[in-house]
Amino acid sequence: MNRDERLRAIQTSEKQYHGDVKLIRTPLTSTYHTALKPQTHPYVYALYPSTCYAYDLLCYGGEAFTQRAAEILEVVIAQQDKDASSESYGIWPYFFEESLEAMDRPDWNMADFHGKKLVLILKNYRDSLSEALLGQIREAIYHACQAIIRRDVGPHYTNIALMGAFVTLVGGEVLGDPEIRSYGEQRLKRFHAFTSGIGTFSEYNSPCYSPIAIEELDSIYQESTTSAAVTLAEQLLDIAWGMIAKHFHPATGEWGGPFSRTYYTLMTDREKHFLGNALRGDSSDIRCPEKYHAYFSSNEERYFIEPTMMAAETGFQNYATTYQNEKLSLGSYTIGSMWNQRRNLLGFVDLGGKRAFIQLQFLKDGKDFCSAIYTGVQSHKQVLFAFNLATDNGAWHQELDVINGKFQAEDLRIRLLIGGDIDELDLPSAEEGKCLTMMLGDTPLRIEAVLEESDYGALEVAVERRDDELHLDFVIYAGEEKAFDFHAIQKAVWIFTLTLDEGPFPEVNIQLEANSVTTTIGDREKQMSITVPTAPGKTLDFYRNNRVGLPRNLMEHLR
Image (tube, rainbow, N blue to C red; front, side):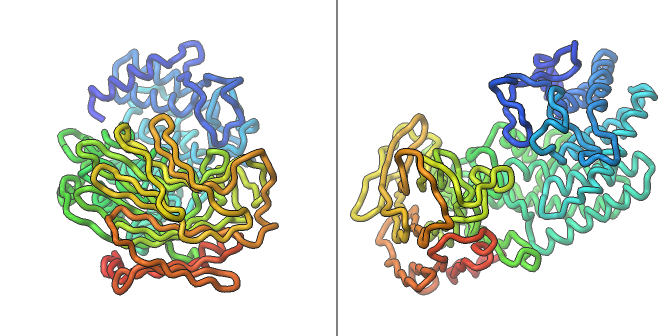
């Protein structure tokens, strides 16, 4: 962030700053961890945004800004749990109005987020602050480091694994604490070994979190005095930029899928700004290595598959496939829950200067349903996929909203969501059977239910235009609210094909066994298959036992 951008950020925060409390006041938008509700607390005094505001003020400099930053930091630091015997030791609540005890599960990530800003402040702006406040900052960093060490996040949690490594590594350096510094270095070494073993980040291709991972690695590279850690950070930065570059789709200007985690399907302004600055390289900001620049402008065909898990640890592998050409991008996983932050099957299509996206969903009462388990396989512009139902998962979240296969609902459906610049697109037409076809510009889209083995009855096809979306739905149930119990049914599996290509369409071969079904499509080097159980079951059993037969033409591109 250059000086002008920093000033604009300060001016934005200034509008939300309340001098009586000395904190930023924002609308309540958080849905995880906090027990506060917008109906009773439409606005809240947010601690982490206030820490970021204080950091920006110190970066910009000046007596008035420095004084305000000091006042904010004193308030924020006072909210940290400093009791080493406490379960929430070393972390902060989200809001001034809500204590850690009152939260719906305190967020341990707050030790990492606040800790990083405080480490940077202590390292780079200590001459601007009083000795008394510096003592408070040192103490807060120490407690945050102890929380991070106590939690000891593994390398699979990419952005927090890296952020915690920075806080403890550089925090240990600035505190002069060799034990904390050594922990941070060892944590980074473990992350490097884990990531190198896979060949990519396990928090794979995340538009919201990959930039954070790069920011953390760049911070280690720029700020650490431990030479071995700097070398590891440089190597990991190369892996991160390679992952981003080869997924970017120049024709639509979008970040191609699949996504392990995201909050939005289309790129946000923040993500666009991050990539734009990194590619221009005309400031002191993070820079994308020159060797990857061509990926952001080339429309040459790309087709590759990558493992995204450490199979020896998980007992299963999840592959990510991406196909791109001058018109479209199509990406998919081989396994995953239909959590609202995940994009198991995602496409982008160029509409002649505009773009549309294609997102697969499984919905309960209109919300993404993570008890639906996806299994799929992709060959170029075609995907074969299935859904099973989990008896041990959640509704909108796999940990914070566990339902274990029993719940009340008015609606359960599978949806292909079409969004983006779709004003001129026509609704799809239904062909014989349960097949929907439409044109996305000059790109044909076809989705068909090729098997439905379900005690809930036959799927109903429904299409609609709502607001700025097109919904291509396969309805399992819609009506009065009723009880669902996945433990009480014998059959619940749905299998589909999706293609962004013209026909003729390959024949689908379905082989039903006593407790499973194998579906095969294509021939020769394009042949692919999936084998899934017909009954509901446990999530991990699906992950470990559902099978995909990858096409030979894809295995040649396994990275």
